[in-house]
Image (cartoon, rainbow, N blue to C red):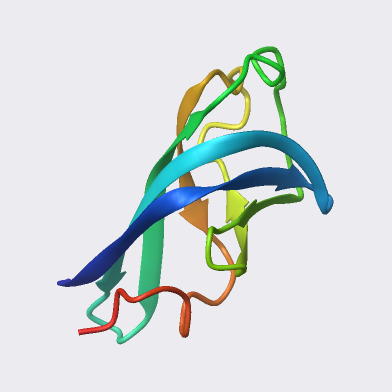
Length: 100
């Protein structure tokens, strides 16, 4: 596995394209041995509106630079809370300045 870089900023957590909460995020990007690019990160939500949400699917992160990333929670059975880990499930190429 090779570390490629990270992107961070402020954005909006969305569900099915609708804004849920403002968020700070940090995403780290890695190249796996098979050449695939994997990205995962942490998010801090700016309000408590999502505290009781569980099983959340169809989530996106709208970054501060305007990109929309499809994301999923590895442990979707737990309440969302204000801080959580996530994986980027869509294409990360061309997003932010993580490229070295």
